[in-house]
Every structure is written in C-alpha cells, then in structure tokens.
Amino acid sequence: MSTIAPPEPAIDLGSRLVRTPQPVAIVIFGATGDLTHRKLMPGLYSLAAQQLLPPEAAIVGVARSELDDEGFRERMREGVRRHGHAPVDEDVWAGFARRLHYLPGGFDDSGVYERLRALLADLDADRGTRGNRLFYLATAPEFFPVIAERLGGAGLAEETDGGERFARLVIEKPFGEDLRSARALNTRLGQVFRERQVYRIDHYLGKETVQNLLVLRFGNAIFEPVWNRRYVDHVQITVAEDLGVGTRGGYYDQSGALRDIVQNHMLQVLSIVAMEPPARFESREVRDEKVKVLRAIPCFDDGSVAGDAVRGQYGAGWIAGEPVPGYRDEPGVDPASNTETFVAMRLAIDNWRWSGTPFYLRTGKRLPRRATEVAIQFKPAPHLPFTSTAVEAVQPNLLTLRIQPDEGASLRFLAKVPGPQIDLRVVSMDFAYGSSFLRPSPEAYERLLLDALLGDSTLFARWDEVERAWEIIDPLIAAWATTPGPFPNYEAGTWGPAAAEELIAREGREWRRL
Image (cartoon, rainbow, N blue to C red; front, side):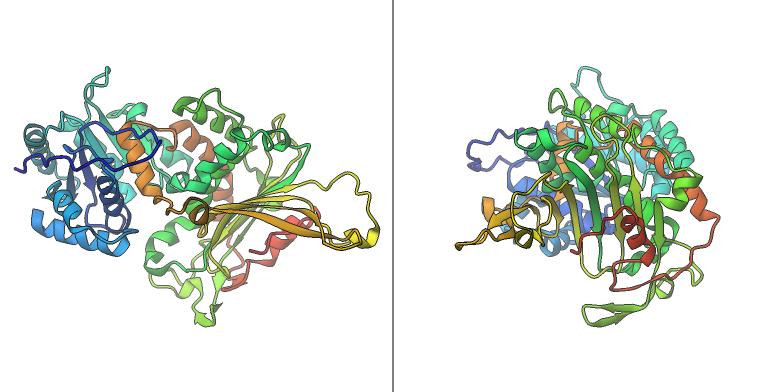
C-alpha cells in the first residue's frame, strides 16, 4: 500500500480562514462515469493542488470496468487534463495519483463491499484515514438504495456520535421521480444512514453567484429594506440552454425539464432569493428558512395547472446559424415522446414578505443562448418630477444576478445625460467575478466536495426541502402525464412556445430578453 506523502509547503491564502477536512477515505461509486471524469476528479485534484485535502486523504473508485490502480489513474489524469480549469502540474499530480485506488465490481455484489471494507481498513493503517468515510454515489438513481443497503450490511455506514469517526453519503439528483418515489427512497436510505449523514447535492448551490445571493442580501444594508412586496414588482428566474439533449436522450426522455431542472435547481434558487434572514449562517438555520419559503408556495391544483404553467417541446430549427433536429428526432428519444423540454410557470409565496409578488420561472433546451440568471424587477418610482419627453423610455430599477456563464451582477438605474437639459437614460453598474477579484471562480463541485468533507451541509438539500419541492410540483407531473402536449410547439433557436409569453403578458409583464 502507499505511504503518506509529506505535505507540501503551505500556499499563501492571505487573510482567508481556511478549514481543513479531517483525514478521510473518499469512495466514488460510478468512478468511470462522465460525472467523475468531468467534475469530481478535477474538483478533488484542484482541492489537492490548493492543499485543501489533508495529506492522509485517499480516493477509491468503484465501477464495473476492469481496471487496475494504474489504469484508473491514467483515466482520471485525462479527465483532469481535459476538464480542469488549470493545466496539470506534474509534481502535484504525482502526489495526487498516489491517493487513487480502484476496486472493480457490480454495485449490487455484496462481495465488492467486503473487499471495499478490507481496502479501507488497509488505508486506515497505511495512510491514517482514521475510519472516516465519504461515499459519493455518482451512479444511476436505481443504484442509490442498493449501494446504501450494501454499505450498511458491510458495516461501513457506522459513525460515532461524538464525531471521532464519520460516514457520509453524497447523493446526486434526481432524488426520486415524484413525491411517492422520493419518499420511498428516503425511507430506504433512512434505514441505514441518519439524516445528518446524507448530503443531497445540487451543484447550482455551489455556484458563486448563488452563494453571493446570501451575502448580497444579508451583508448589505441597502438591499434588505427593499427586498419585499412593497418594492419588488416581480422576480424572474431563468435557466436557458442552447444545447439539446445530446447523448442523454434516453435519460432525459424519462425525466423532462420539470424534474431535471425545476424541482431541484430552480426551487432551490427561489428559496434562497426569498428566504428570511437566518439568525446565524449555519446549516440548520439557513435550511430552516429555505423550507419556510417552500411551505409558503401553494401546491399546483387543477386551476393552477391550467392557468399558471406552460410546457413545450422543441422542434427542428436553427442554433448559431446551424440547423438542428427536433427533440423527437434526437438519439434515444421516443418518436412520439410527450416529454417537455421547456417549462414556464408563475408561483406565489403566501407569506408576509412576498404576498402578491409573482415569481416567474422558465427553463428550456434549444433556446437562443445559454444563460442562467435571477432578475429582481423593482416597482416604478411613485413620482418622477421631470418632463414627459425626458422619461418616455424610463424603465424601473432592475437587479440582475448572473449565475452562468458570466457570473456577476448588474443594477439598472436612471442617470442624467450630460448637457444643459434634464434628459434621462437607463444605465447599469456591473460586477463580474473574474475582473473584480482577478481570480477564477472555483467550480461548483469543488466547493461542494470540500463542504461535504468538512461536514458543512449548508449548501446541500435537507429531506424536508426535497419533499416539499416534490409536493409543489407533483400535481403538475400527474396532470401532464395524462394529457398529451401539443408537441412540438416551439422551434429550436426561439424563446419557447407562445403560451409562455401569454402567461406573463396577461399581468402586463414580459420575459427578459437575454
């Protein structure tokens, strides 16, 4: 077995207080899959390069592919080379590669878990991982309960109440297909792992702009007084993709935009935008406030399904001057598929802060461009003491938070045009992460992996959050499943079906043109 590599010289991190995880063995199920290749291994390598992984940490990959340690290391090096945000440093990689181990086998094979237990015991002895375990399920959802139960059967889910030894389970989405299946999955997991051990990951919560929402709201006195129904006209949350389903047609046709994006990503972002100030920036307090928001959102019923939600599916069209096929012609998609690739909806939050302020959500594939943002549209000023000609084109204040691709924020406001007359023009103040801090933002998975290793669950979804999100949209899922859509109903390269424009226009508003 490998010996512990000596720690490298500390990197100067300025005045930042950096927490270092305890020694740990990280076990990735689905270690040869796309997620591990593109996100997990580049994220772990980056943490190691910044010396944010303890020198004792080991990484074990588990998958069906017949590989040995060296073969696994070579495959992971290629993933880091292709998908990391910095060139591979050969010295750093040499130390990182020694941490990597591989165990072939099926996820439902109890013998694999016996061999895993033996390997982890060896790593405890050789590297000093101290019995700490982080299990990452980067597999198809049907294996989630199987792996958890096999880990429990092998005695690998046990931890001490005092924190001397931990065992954590990180689960990718989707967490269930609907409310019933989510509850069934949680019940099976709960027979092995306690809630405090389960980390339901949503990579959107690891993005800098999403985290900055909390700082923007609660760290700046100028925003919080106007963050309510009295001053905010409405909120728009958009997740737009210009790509189609690509090679994910088989998976996506069983999921759709409602399950893939709205139930998790968008409702999580909405809850952060709308939450009340937590007493402390700690996991329980933050997640308690998010749950309160979700509980204040009325669930869909027959009336709101018909009036407050729109679905779409793209047909053939043009993207960036190139012809692209319709959804039903994509590989792996049923030629008669009723799966939505676009969703728009109007949600209400029935609480003191937001009553009467609509929240509009939209997401879709094969839209004109890739962009994810939160737009806070403020109400017009109650009175403008200027001439009518000077204010014809005046627009209310708008705060836009860009989550991707260019993370940052902008504030739209009025200013006077230089000259002898009082002419007004809309201008913007812009903030961009790259130019403001002269350093790239860390990848979302990098941040979330570190938090999971530290035992910080603030940016992970708690079960009651997940359950309530399913409760909100479950009636919509059921209604759409029994009613064929008028598909395809928007061309690739457009902003979705006409019904989405009508949804917001009936209240005198319009979608932002991104």
